[in-house]
Image (cartoon, rainbow, N blue to C red; front, side, top):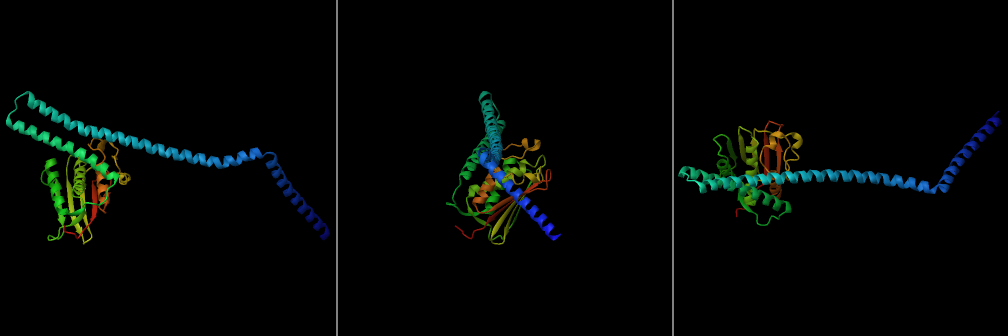
Length: 303
């Protein structure tokens, strides 16, 4: 019995070995006699993932390029409009003064309109030039101590005049030691551009009812904080990470009617980063307003 079982086991083992050997021989033979097909198979297995990867990367780059071209086109259209409108207005008022007599009060009104239009032109040109300068990168050479409280006062006064705001539409709160206003090491014109761009955005995106609150606080001896809040259109949560990109404007029917070149917040982020600070936006969603917060490191230098 045992010898019979042993013989059967040996038979099965031998048959198994022969089967495995046969399979190996067949595979080796197939490779030898069909090496060309095997080579194509191996090449295909290597090249196929590479081709798929190349297609995916090419698609990603293509989509990015399309978006970039759309942003550039929108920027050109916006800047063209920002330049054309005040130029047409100035020309119209000059032609009116040239072609017919105008009484003195009306003449002064025309002069003021033309001055405002020229200021608007200058502001647009300065935005474009500053954005280009910041994108190319700059060193901190030439930085000097700046009284941030004075910068805030000048920017608020300019915004109040530029937009002809009524009392209560733009409020300001400053919290810092009276004997030591916050001072930062930086470029005064660029810091003014930060504050003016944030206030300008808050006013433009407030809709028909302007309620803008500006705050300057000093956090200990390390940082100064600027907050600009409005109760306007708000920002969708998904867009908060996009709004500081160059040329970027929030899509939508409401925002598309608001003038702008998509450079203001890019300038804000670039200037703040150049001064060693941080900036971020907060909004609970559309129609719920927005708060921008800028934090800048303080300096103990006095001159």
